[in-house]
Image (tube, rainbow, N blue to C red; front, side, top):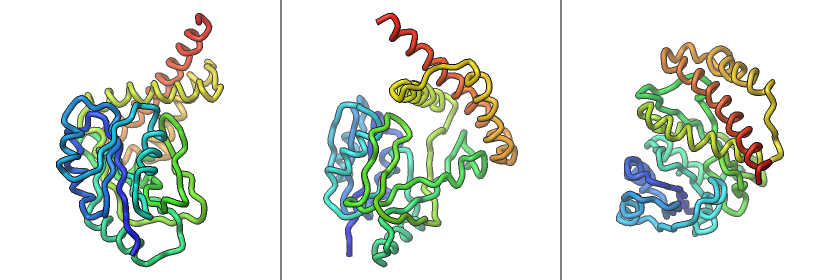
Length: 252
C-alpha cells in the first residue's frame, strides 16, 4: 500500500498546530515547514514527531513546494496549520489510497468557521481545494498567495470536508486581512497589473454581490453579511495597496 506524507507550513501557529498534528497522526510522515516562528510552534511540532524544517519566507507556494520536496512518500496531503482532518475524511483518504484509483489528485471540500459559526454558503462552502496528490504528478506554483497545485493527469473529488478554524475572532481576521491584502497587491504588481479607478469602484460592489446574493450569504445570517462586507473591503484595500506600490516604484 502507498504511504502518505502530510505537509504543513507554519508561522506562529502555537494556538492551532497541536490540533492539526493530532488530526493527521495516522499518516506515515509529517513534514512541518516553519517560516521563522517566534512562538512555540517548532517545539510543539518536534515533540509530536514531525520532521521540522525552517525556511525564509518567499511565499506560500515556495514554502509548500519545499515541503513536498522533503517528503519521502508517494502521496502528499497538504494541510494548513489552522485546519483539521476529521475521522470521516481520514477514512475516506485511506480508502482512496488503498483502492489505487486512477486519479493523480483529489479536491477536498473545506468548511470554514467564521466568528464561531460554520459557514454553509457565502461562496465559502464547499470551497474545493486540491490537497491530496501523488508526489510525482503534482507541484505547487510559486504564488505569494492563493497558491495552487499543478497536476499532471486526472483529478477526483472527495466527499468529507477539511475543517478550517481560520477566523475565531475579528482580531484574528484583521491580522490575516493585513497580511493577505499586502501579498495580493504585491502579486498583482508583479504580474504587471496596475491601479484603475474603475476597478476600485466596481470590483468591491461585484464582490459583495457574489458573496451575499449569488453566493446566498444572506442564509448565513449576520456572519454572511459580514463576510460580504469584509470581502468587498478587502478588494478596496488590495487596490489601494497596489496604488501605493506603483507610487513607491516611481520614486525609486
